[in-house]
Amino acid sequence: MKLNTNSNTYIIIYSAVLVVIVAFLLAFVYQALKPMQDTNVALDKEKQILNSLNIRGLDDVEADATYHKLLTKVDSIGEGKERKPYIYYFKVDGQTKYVFPLKGMGLWAGISGFISLNEDKNTVYGAYFDHESETAGLGAEIKDSQEWQEKFQGKKIFDENGNVAIGVEKKVEDSKKAYEVDAVTGATLTSNGVRDMLRDGFKQYEKFLKEK
Image 1: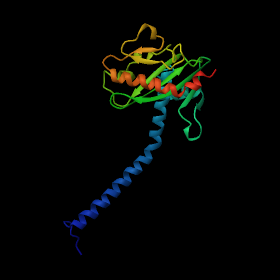
Image 2 (image 1 turned 135 degrees about the vertical axis):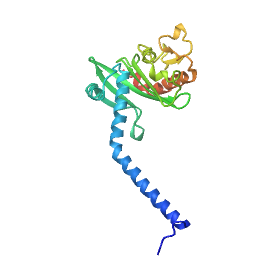
Image 3 (image 1 turned 60 degrees about the vertical axis):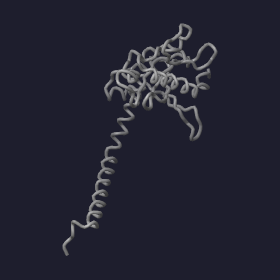
Image 4 (image 1 turned 90 degrees about the horizontal axis):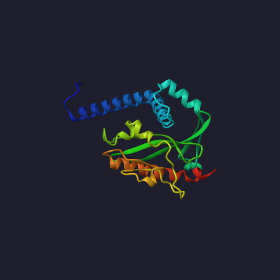
């Protein structure tokens, strides 16, 4: 019996079989590549953390080796299912550095960052920021401008009253230069997002930071 390739039944069955085959192939490729993707994601995170420790420009092998050499502990401030966010402990030049992951919202989508603090738990040692889709040459400068990230070095997390005060402002007053950084030029909303991310993020860690 000859198949009627012009019939609706044939077309539906053919399309269904084709969809199943394509879905199977895509699932197979995804599973085959997933370990490599996971490795690349983990390595990118390691490099971002190293950037926040002012260790930049390493290739993949050097970055992975340096990260695991300096890392001493990963801890959390929560309990049970709420064991997050995490705190990374590093030993750099014989001194303990704490690295804190932060997440927030920029102008168009999510932003994130890692901030490292000195042993006093109040002074910024280094900073690195990332974004999903901020405007190139404007908001994207939070990631692309190392010079801007380095402005955070030496800034304080808390003001003289013990409040979380680190932030980003369009015009930093003289009285607040100890804990605020000038905003990225032409990127007010992205800069505001960084400010909110810093202040909301460090409030989560406030108890840990004030423990001696």
